[in-house]
Amino acid sequence: MATDSYARLLIRCADQPGIVAAVTTFLFQHGANITELDQHSTDPSGGLFFMRLEFQTPKLDLSRQALEQAFAEAAGRRYNMDWHISYAADRPRMAVLVSAHDHAALELLWRWQRGELLVDIPCVISNHDKLRGAVEQFGIPFHHVPQDTAGQREQAEARMLELLGGNAEFLVLARYMRILGPAFVARYPNRIINIHHSFLPAFVGADPYRQAYERGVKIIGATAHYVTADLDQGPIISQDTAHVSHSDEIDDLRRLGRDLERQVLARAVRWHVEDRIIVDGNKTIVFD
Image (cartoon, rainbow, N blue to C red; front, side, top):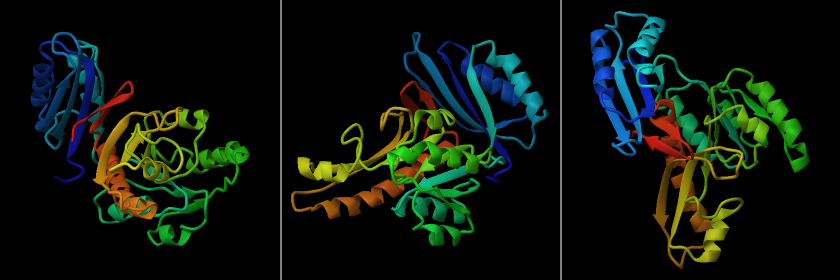
């Protein structure tokens, strides 16, 4: 489907009769062709209702603004919905934060270059200068913002916010090995995606592969989640695992883990870009 020919509608509200009929009838009446519809209820007898629709837009009889105003009147206020419509033609702007490990960041840039990740990337920011050459080969600006000690965090984050300005709608921490402060995180609520190299909630914090090795686990994992002020506690988007054995050393775990991290992070970012995620408290509803 052409990237400028469809839109997506996300809905969250109390579950009640008539929602699907109201939404689909409204879109049909205004010339939309629904191509994908997913829904989820936490409790059909009084819980929450979540829905995601994709619909084609070429035959709509209203402008974007008029369509959204009409939807609010026809269904949004009637069912007290938390909703929004996004348009695939509006490519979101994604900034990448990375430290010295290149695998997760380069996976995203490679997918972007191949047209698999439909975003614009205004910049990559790193607390190391090591990846400058690799990033600039993609034609993407690279900014080195040192943060060697915890005392430099406030200054470094101020500089990063200056570089980001209004040019990034969401951020990806592609193995950015620094903790972001609460004030920084608050600028991007549910719009910072982190890849953590363990199967959360196991082995939070630093060096989880060593923690896993010392516990003698038989499965390692990777977790992509939204960042909150609490370290590694944000809503989980995607996870995957790999089996290991007693014969695997720490470096083996790290090698296997890098492949997991690449795949899990890329999948989570794609779901975010395609509006397949609704955050519900500290959980996510993912329409994959």
